[in-house]
Length: 112
Length: 115
Image 1: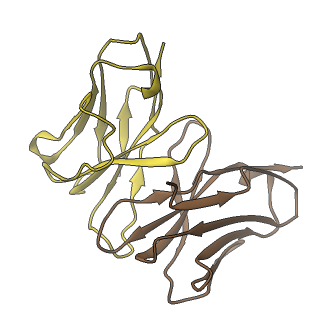
Image 2: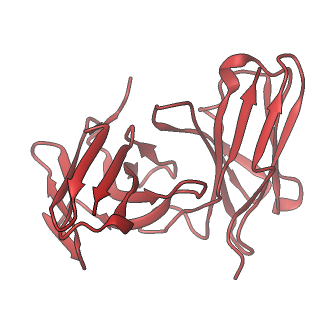
């Protein structure tokens, strides 16, 4: 049973466009929601993270929107660039544990 | 500061053979995690060490997998005997503290192919 569902599996966006990746979770004990960015041959790297006491967090071109009642959160990449082409993973963790529960990943391609 | 390093980067072995993966966490990080991503699926938790102790090994698939962290420094993950379904990318991560906003830093992964 996948506790964090991520969509779409792949995404193609034109340079300058907005990339949107969505995740939904089931476990209400989750209280930390990071997004990871992974380039080929590298490990996942933390991009941005949010806790459920806020509905939005923005860092540069990257924004997380969080809807606690719907148990959904999304990553928005504004002004997408070819260098943003990578695989993105949403994840969730509860404070009682330490492990991350990941979504299935989204392969983003930004076309020049 | 060196990041999390994993050895080898790639490994191709035959079904039934043994493979040992190694992870060197960031110095001073007590928490060490193993994860695995099978082709096209989500990254799944395998186990968590706090120093040399196994804190949570609920994600280990079966008893063909053995993880150790002697002395609380580097960790090894042995698969014996390997099966075809063990193929995937094995990631190691480490963090300084548990919970909160503590960031987990990932290694580049070991791609294991069992043929």
